[in-house]
Image (spheres, rainbow, N blue to C red):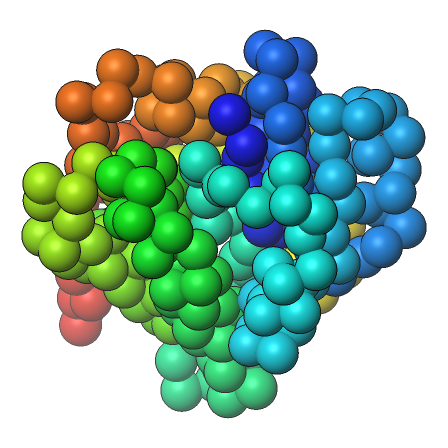
Length: 249
């Protein structure tokens, strides 16, 4: 099986690459940071092929896929993992540039990668697309604004893929984690404020990147007649709360 993982330079993507390689599969690891790709490639050996790629750039996607060696071109699993959150301020105080970056990466980039690889899967009659969503796509919270909206897009796009792909043999899943530690997610979201990022996980036992990787592996290796539409997963320390009410007292 050949697996293509976007955003494989850290976090979920790197953990997924390790999991698939350790179980005997070949992995195309992609991302913008070539040094990190090369480091992961050195760690995992010949079962991985590093591909420098920016999902927000259609020309970059085309060049990367066109340049793949023949023996790597038949992609069985696409994991659209590249994505990010930026900021936790309320909508009226948020940066429009941050919003644009999240939409470009989490929505447009995911769509462009899917459109580039999906036709060959349909032609072969097999393949799996795993899109990384979030609990934020279903549950709003203060400061989630555009990030949550992009993950709601991932959910609906994945369901619509399922509608289009019925009978083709190609599967699509939205994998939506909750609180997950040990990655760059909060450091990026909080613009490098490592102290504030650490407080997000203080006193918790969050999910890990390996938990997400193991779940993605399970989805990808199920018998081909089974499609997992959506998995929402949280650590036991996380749950749901009451709706917000502003009281004038």
